[in-house]
Length: 396
Image (cartoon, rainbow, N blue to C red; front, side, top):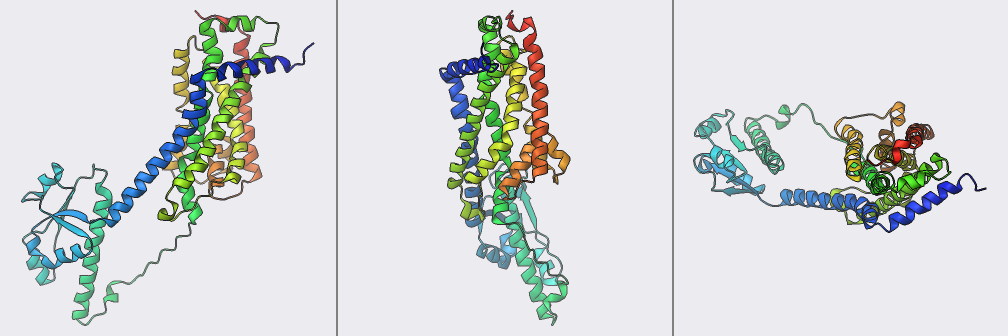
């Protein structure tokens, strides 16, 4: 008589052997799932940083209308890095709308009179806030004008025998307590989402093929008619899918480890703590979630009669990890103990703690694992109930 786990082991080996022969499974589990996220992360971050550095150093092109009315102002702005363009013409509003120029500065005819009388001289800045490249350029132009205004105000006070400090009753000195490691963790804020997605994609095709695929090929019925408990068959499929999901997750972590060496950390003033020790701590945190993802995938695909239908169901399932990621990125949430009892959210909070260089507290970590395993057990029970029904083997 075979041991109770022998049937599950046979199904496990069968599913792994068949999946290793399927290029589609290998492509998703070992290539697209683990490598796509780190590749996108490095490329987008390097492009963003290089663009910001380039905008901060290169001359700022601005079309100035009425430059002859304020030669000192224009000369000061040029010394600060402004490049005067001639594309504004007489109508800077139309020049910006037609995207001939990104920024336009109009100096009105009343500027000279207001300046000589000591009254506030008005300036008009024309820009298009719907253009992505306008924000940094607009902030830089305003900083140039504020610098000129402050220096001019100080000289006017000195001419009248007054100390410039009279208009500065408060001096604010910012003391940023964020460490370079903490700022680096902020850049990796989307890492938990990429890891969860790699777990979802890693075993997705195996979950589809092992249930909906076999059902479509009419090969599931011969497997189910064997004198073996259905839960052993289900367990073998779960373990095989877990193996591929865990392999995809491990490769994704290693890919992020390599990607850290290609990030411009020195230029951004950050440091990354994403090393082997962090990877060794993330894997145990993610293991209960991997099990939950696998059981949920097999449970969902068991209701599908074809692989196409299963793909539709799992496509909807992949939207769930977006919710905690969006919440954490948009809302200033302070972690509470109950949050670790929410699957997906608890794992994301734990991973962010590790990236900041903080040690995981035993209480929240155990609570997160137990809550996730409890939900995985409930999903396994539901899948087992589905496997006990005879309609599972019917493909039409």
